[in-house]
Structures are given as C-alpha cells and as structure tokens.
Length: 575
Image (tube, rainbow, N blue to C red):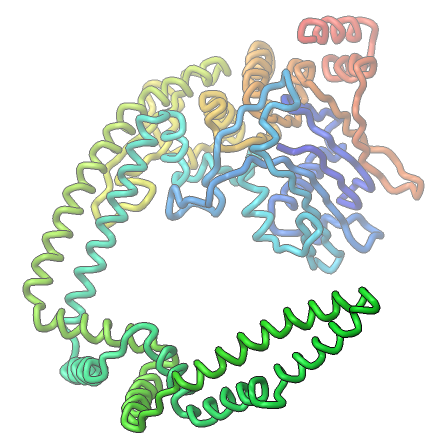
C-alpha cells in the first residue's frame, strides 16, 4: 500500500506530495493540468525505464520518493515460469473503515527514492541504501497495478491468468496446484537420475579406466574420516618423544630434587610460620604458600607420569610415517581436504557401479520415472479438473460486474486448454487465458487484443472486484477508466470503484463527478504560472469544505449556485 509519494521537478511539477487514503483516492482537474505526471512518478518507483524528458526544464534532475507498506511475502515462487519477476504474492484485505487494515506484523515498511538526471542517468535507493531499478521492479512493482488504457497490465499477460484463477478458486485449485508441483519436482528428479545413469553408461573407456584407477588407489589406502588429523597429532608427539621426555623429566627435577622448588617453598613456609608467632599477619602468607605447594607437588607428579608414559617405538613410528605419506599422496592428488578424497572415491565408485550394473540401474531408474510420471499425470488431471470447474464460475462472476458497468452484453470467458507434456511447467499442465466476447453472437478473442482501451480498463475493474481480497495486488491505479462514460454508466462505474475500494487501495484519475464524490481522499491537480512565469502543476488536497466547488465544476464546467447545490447533494449521499 502506498503511504506517501513526494515528487520534485518532474515535468510541470516542481514540488508535490500525495498521501492516498487506504480506500479510494480521486485526482481531478482540468485536462492538461498534469495528472498523468503523477502516474509517471509512480512508474519510476515501480522500476520502469527513465525518460530524461520528464526532468523539469531548467533543473538538473527530478526526484521521486515513496513510502510503502508491503505485505510480508513468501519467497518468490514462479507461479508461471514465463511471468514477470515478483508475481508471487500473498493476500491482503484493505478496508476503508480502518487505516490499520492489515496487521503491522504482516507488513514491512519500505522507503524508495529515484533520481533521474537531465542526461538520463538514474540513481535508486531503498531504505537509504543504494539499489538498482531491478530492485524496485522486484520489491515495489508487484504490489501495484497501473490500469490505464495504454499501460502494460498483468491482466493482459496470459502467464498470470492461471494465478488469478487459482487465487479466486481458493483451496480447491491451490491445493491441487501444490500437489501438482510436488509431483512435477519428483518427476523431474527421476528423469534427471535416469539421464545421469545413461550418461555414465555412455562414458568413454578412458573415463571408466580413470574411475577404476581412482577407486583402486584410494581403496588401497582406505582412508577414514578424521584419521589424517588424528595421525598428524600422534606423529607430532612420536617424532619428538625424546624431547618431550626430557622436558617432563627436567620439570620434575626442578620441582622435586633436593634443593628444588618444593624444598625452597618449604623453607619459606617455615620462615613465615616462625615469624607468625610474633605477628599474625604473616600466617595468611604461609597458608598461601602451602596451597601453592600442593599445586607444585601435583605438577611434579603429573610430569613424572607423563615421562613414564612415553613409549618410543621406532617400528611404530616408521609405520605411522609411512601411513602419513600414503594419506598425503592422496591429498595431493584428490585434496586439498580428506573430505575431497572421500568424495572422489564415492564419485568413482558410483561411475564404476553404473557401468558394471548399468542395465539393472537403468531399468530401476526407468521404472522410477514411470511411477513419477503416473503420479504427475494424476495430479495434473486433478489440477485441470479444479480449474475447469472454477473457470466458468469465475467468468460469470467477472461478467456480472461487467454487466453492472453496462458493457453492452460483453462477456469474459476463462479458457482452460490442456498442454502437451513437454510444455508443463510449475504454472500447471494447462494454459489458462481470459478471452473477451464483445457480444453474444461474436467470437471470444484474447483479452490482450481488445481494441478499446476503455474496455480494457473496465474489464480490469470487473476482474479486480471479482477477485476481491484474494487479489495479490494491494494498490490499483486507474487512469481514463471513465473515458467515454456518462449517464447511468457513470453511476455504475462509481459504485463498482467504491466496492473495489473495500478490498484494495484505489487511486483514480477521473473526470466524473459521480466517481469523485466517492473518494475518501480528494486531490485537485491544477496548472498555474510559477514565480518564473513557467507553468507549474500543483497537487492540492481538498478539505471537506473545498470539495463542493470542484464537484460543481466537474458537473457543469462552471461553479454556480445550482451546480454547488447539486454537488453538496452528491457529497451528502456518500458521506
């Protein structure tokens, strides 16, 4: 959801701030006032290509900043392998009754900024850190749909239609899709294993000879995990046994021999005990030395035990050195770590086994593929059935809202067509596409080929209302959705937009008073001469007392007492 957008030096806008409501926000104003510049600002924050011509004349750069509250989403999931990045999104329920429609624990705040210089170079930051345009497209764009007549819309991309249908169908299709994806992954893994076995069977004799040599050489040594480190520690002690024995013996002698440290300590204790008869302050010192004496005696005893435990055996040492040399030879060839040696052995053994037991292993792998494919076919049939069952109901639901918009008997047809096995992807085993039938006797055609931009916008509107809270997109921005609309259709359009605003954040650029009065937030876009006589577009939030005048202008073109009265009546009806 968009919390705030700040625009500076973009086209005719010198400085503007838009804070859309949680429900319906309307932007009104005279034609040519600069409303579309605000949409251009939003496109920049969604990661669309920068156009240096948007930089306001006489300035070095434009800047667009936005604060968004985005739903925490799971890791991006390629619901359609060919869909744009970021199509995988969670549900959201935005209600105009509360600005806190979504639990804060399920949202993350994101602040994005984009600067475009007059030479066309662009800079992006997200949450204060440098970022790329792709980051904007991945993090911001998936939560917003631009529904203008000439915009590229997710609705016009057939790769997203299965996702929309599954979301509307609910658990019946979503659970079937999850099972299908699990079965597809298993089938792909089984096929990969079969290919690996066949590749191994086709290995050249030189590769096989190398594998047999590797296996034989490593098995001749038979290294064990952790052996090298343990042997290295033992050798360090064995090779320096004499020095270690001398060190331990010298320490024992220095402590325990006549005149050694322990004897000197005993003399010091005796001296302090003698003095303590006359001054008790010396008694604690003597006690401290006694405790130190216990420590020295323990050390002397342990040093002697260590010396006596050293068992130098030249034959054992030679065997250990020979073993270490063999291990180091393996490390030089297959290392640098013993784990690498063991991995090389496993790989070689696997290749030899696949060749020696190739027929049996290929037969088993082929059987695994057949089982996985059978399970996949069953899961695919269940998914296709769930989609075929939901498709006509979804089409009817959308068509009912199109009827509300008085679209002349037009109909949305949701077509589900099975795909050949080679074309199955994580999106499913069938192609889902929305078709548009302008009239009962006319042929349904792909939605992307509808000629009228106004029809595109109104079909988009109907689809979004039908999806309701299961729609993955948080914010919908409509531009020219009311083109060529008037009379009763205008009232119907306003009703449908109001319904949509109960489940989405909706921003509408409109020329219809019937739509404008429904806005929870109302902005007037006005073009005026600036301080340097250059035209400027101002974005003015209208307070309740200011709205009647703008509604009156939209109704009659002039602000008269009659139009003001009518405007107040319309506003009162939808207060």
